[in-house]
Image 1: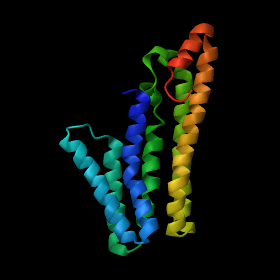
Image 2 (image 1 turned 45 degrees about the horizontal axis):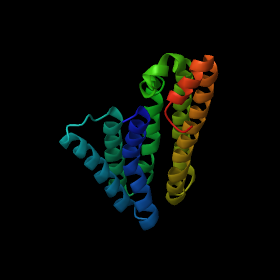
Image 3 (image 1 turned 30 degrees about the vertical axis):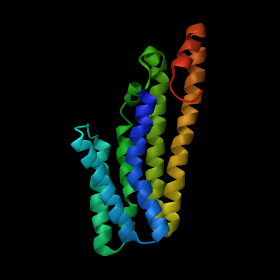
Image 4 (image 1 turned 30 degrees about the horizontal axis):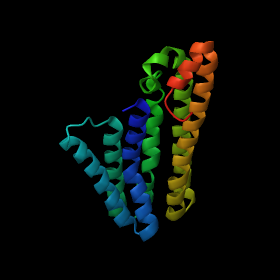
Length: 196
């Protein structure tokens, strides 16, 4: 599977428990049910990877830990704000990890990696900034809007902002690679994964 396909599948698997949690909460308005489903799905995802002897990433362990801790606090206190903190925690972990220079290189085709490296480093920091911004915005919303409005925000803003930045990055990377070295730059742009 290409680096792009692997990345999209990985993100989808990590986001699935949160999306299901939000949908269950919006449909049922029952924070206990939604939290239980979210914890169960996160644990099931880890168990599935463990049973298949697949690697379990730091983000997956962090996601399970955060939903277990915040979910348990919500279930014990009846206060939905505890579980509403989870996206802030995940985005802070992601933002910190994305501050590491060169983290995006593994997603670039080897044939264009050297040419793309300067832009990959810049976009790595842009992605980190988006994660920190989303974390801060979620934290503000936890204290300022009701749980149903918060759930709608989390179903819309994070996926739209991630897809938007993904498209912007691909357009910029292709244009940069196309002009970087004339004819070979055009070949490099065609080698870049993602939408044309």
